[in-house]
Length: 480
Image 1 (cartoon, rainbow, N blue to C red):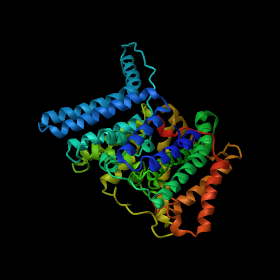
Image 2: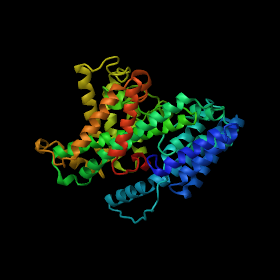
Image 3: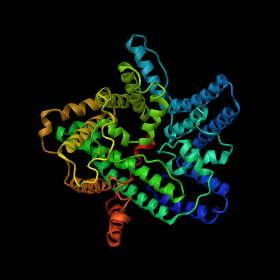
Image 4: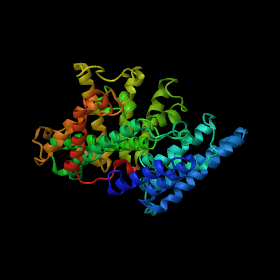
């Protein structure tokens, strides 16, 4: 069920009414309603994968209960290993089986020993990369004794399957979200209005900005051999806007929807394209995944406390694994490695935590130095996005080869309708810049603008969604 669909427009108010007007007197019933609604929401795509979701939930619940009772360290490790093997085993089979098989066959063929192996026609379950990491964090935190394992299976299952963030995050830690299922939720009008405001902004990002940018980005990338370097560069720019509007738009809708039901989810994006270096970008982009890898992979490997070689090793590991998490293709691995190369000089020079404050805080415009830093960071990020979007490594290098050729000076070869998209993006980025000190761009309209201006902005966004909605596109991160 897509957030930007008629199905969800009907589903959400039905669940909302049942939640606050039918089950509101009983916390257990509210949690049961959330669980059932989440299963309906997920099963809307393919009900067959509900069994996978239920099995993963059962395994981690049982592992958690076992860790509570077990004091023997060897047995505790065995329980944790069970959770890791089951969760990563499912993820590996559905997402990476054919990738490893194809590369295994290619390696033997390269060394003169051709072998035959049959690929499987495996359908990737929606959201498996997200809920796998969510349940793993629970088992690991219980193992580390940072979290008391729950006795309430309904609350735990609702935490794992919570429909607003089930299929594309944010990847919630049990330490944050699970305790919210134990406490009675009260309807707070101002919180609900804030949730609706963030949903509106997320929908605008998705259907007006991302989907319109996608139309031209897809046209350029899918026919890259027909275009000059200048047009390809525009395609890369439009994809950069598309993926940000698409994914951060999903996160805004997820967080806003959760707020309607009295839940608080972690922030997942913090205006990453206004970053002054790559380290700052990764503190602001897909925050729930970046912090997950930091806490459960980077720090256990030693983080940045060791010598230079350990710092280099750990940096490449975390970025390459992050790239591989996104998809079973060498393009994602190269995308991760390229970001590691960007990040490494900052880490080695101890400048990776230089830009912690918001850019041009309290000012209307950045200084020249900040502007140039922001522009350079954005250009480096766009360069990496080529590998993320390209169909293959060869495709990515062909696009880059054309961009870094004299044809970059040719006239852009796109229909005039693209200028409407440029205008929408300009409005969008202006609003993002004006609201960069808030949780999301229009979060403080109630405080900063008079009532008539607020109403005009709300109606303007709604009208833009109605008039300028692009061709319906699936959310990009559903494929991950």
